[in-house]
Length: 163
Image 1 (cartoon, rainbow, N blue to C red):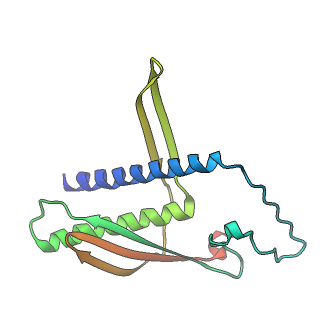
Image 2 (spheres, rainbow, N blue to C red):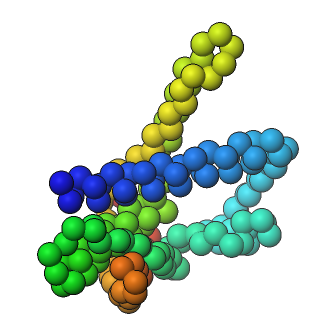
Image 3 (cartoon, helix red, strand yellow):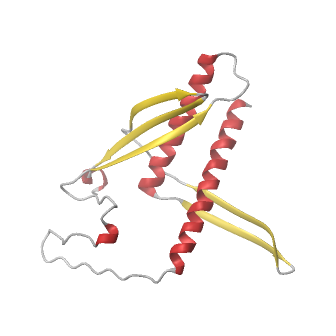
């Protein structure tokens, strides 16, 4: 029962984040599209346009550091404070892994609307991510007022993705 509540909380938080993502994508789609053309005569390309400078780019000679903070809350019916801490930390680590996977692989968003008599009767948004996360390191763990936060980071190098 405890794990199903924890899983339900994680899935609902993921769904809420997906709604924000869908709304952000909708607002981006309303803006005129910009065409970016980059031509490289040698192995060294020109620097990216100013709009893309904030995004880290994985290249042969540059690694990318991804840092996230996962959050977890212990269930109400724990038998001891130690059990509450352990369950909250486990939830926070799982949340951090999910966030890393979302940043590296992206999020699949599926939406479905049921319309009857020209009115929306039901709107469903589902999000999912499928990835293998290896070599992620826990940097810091804090536990305060029942909330556990785990800061986790991973370093990606070009050789990990070269085929």
